[in-house]
Amino acid sequence: MSRESRTAAQPGTQAIDRAAELIRLIVEAEAPRTFTALVTETGLAKSTTSRLLQALERHRLVRRDRDGAFRAGPVFTQYALRGDITDALVDIATPTLERLRESSGETVTIAVPRAGAVITIAQVDSEYLLSATSWIGLDLPPHCMATGKVFYAHGRLPLPDDEDLERLTGNTVTRRDLLEAQFTGIRRSGYAVTREELEIGLVSIAAPVHSAGDDVIAAVAVTGPTARLTPSRTEQVGTWLAAETRALSAALGHHPPNPPPR
Image (tube, rainbow, N blue to C red; front, side, top):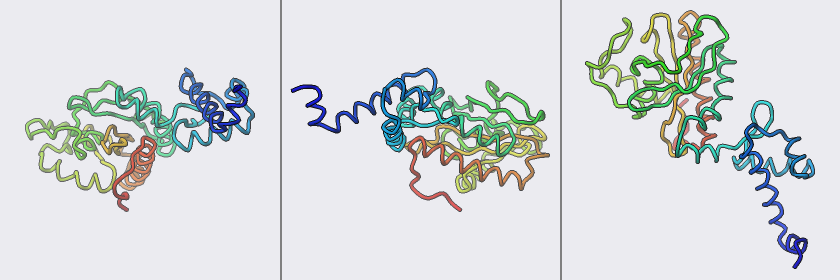
């Protein structure tokens, strides 16, 4: 039987082959692939390419970035997260960080828990001169950080004893029972706040990122000065942040067992 006859006898095979070729081109590329480049390289009709890409996007095998170019989708990220979390997570979280910076104007970071510490792995800088600090590589006490409180509240960091809770400002929580008392509220609201607990004049808001298995694998934080992040503004940003991290978690395959609290 000729190749043409086999393809005609198995009409689904051709579609699978074409979709597989698109996935291979996108996943193996060193940079995002544009629609035009994919049409040119495959030789497929624009309508066929568009239809296949839409199907692949629905099944989370590919995704579009802010410029409309195609990247490997969350399914591949989930697989990658079984090994080294950092590169894959930063890649898929960057649009979330950028949207939060645009909406808040403040510095936005993403951190992961490692060996009892909070490690910041990516940052999008504030549009303001005040708060233009790099958090990457800083060794800071988790109990003074909103990201640290997120990891404590979700059991991703061991809760320290009282003698290990160093006082950095007059607002630092230095009693384990008082720190632990905040965790129910953090889980209920979907975000944690530290106000002048690490440094006078500094506010940070953080929300968890969940994996498909419901583990908290990271936390995204918005940080800025008290002059801009007033209590009412903090609540507004916290709501945005919790919504964005829920969407990021969903992109990683997370389906919460219960709807988020209102």
